[in-house]
Length: 112
Ligand SMILES: [Cu+2]
Image 1 (cartoon, rainbow, N blue to C red):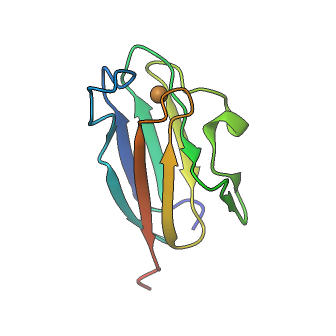
Image 2: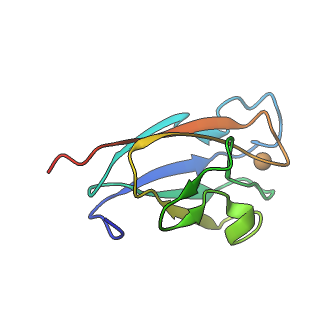
């Protein structure tokens, strides 16, 4: 479960620090499943740093705070942040410096 065969990939698109760029986190709703694609990778392709921060201060039972700031700080341009969810659920998150950037990861229960 900590090293699933696939990853769920989200892109922080160029211009995301501008509220007019409504795509910011793409896709807005990302679907993974436990044991299959519960490791989520955000790639920042914008020219400024962003965070990936839980709306609810969620802490995973194994991997701790779902918050890039607690793990690596802001995600610099060109870099990635990854987080592995070990429980199914809906995880709403945002960017701390740009709170209009909002999205959700949905992790389905294991199919096996
Ligand atoms: Cu941001």
